[in-house]
Image (cartoon, helix red, strand yellow):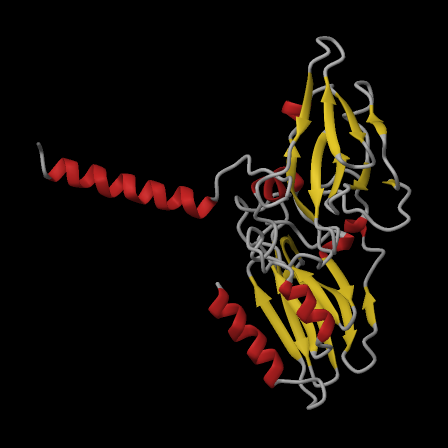
Length: 304
């Protein structure tokens, strides 16, 4: 909440780079703009990928990182993914972002049970993975070095080349990048036909400044500053094989059914954003279940 954000900003301010401080941050969810791998079909759809994802202040964290070189490490979990993705570790400026996996077999999305070990001194940090699903001959868990961070120079050496980095079809979400070959600079007409909409990968700016794109048969909105995925505007089931047009240089997005010739204009939300919540907030659902349980218990003990 706002009080916690104010507390965080105050701690960073009181521990400045000029005074020689080095800050490590640990949060359940990663921050928007961190560059860590995100699950489009789970957390992007639900609007819960990032710390304060649904709040207007979600961008304050990456802004603080960029403005404060004393923040050296930010570790997070939330995605229940292993450390075997190249974007399980990313670096922005002086800060290294690290994804932490899970120990439990049931809660792991890719079957790999891993935890992190951080070994540090005043001038460097080493990031290790403990592979609980791999055992050495003596029965101990496999331990590997993933990154060596020089806190003085800012250089980060990643341990690439490990066999676990050989992957093609693992969980991912498309994150636009400048000059990635997928940007449509001035869309005015068809951006995907009915035959290509399920496979098209592209993104563009709307006239209002919002960023939309197509990926895995979905219309997705991205943060205009960091280009991180914010949420799904039209999911693959609703989009189907409809043609996608952007008209009047980004004034409107139009979906066209080539068989019925029906058209649908995709309107923004009241706040100007486009992304929708296809799943209700997890915390809200939990609170609803709790109230239902309380009501049921009361009814059972107070028969009317």
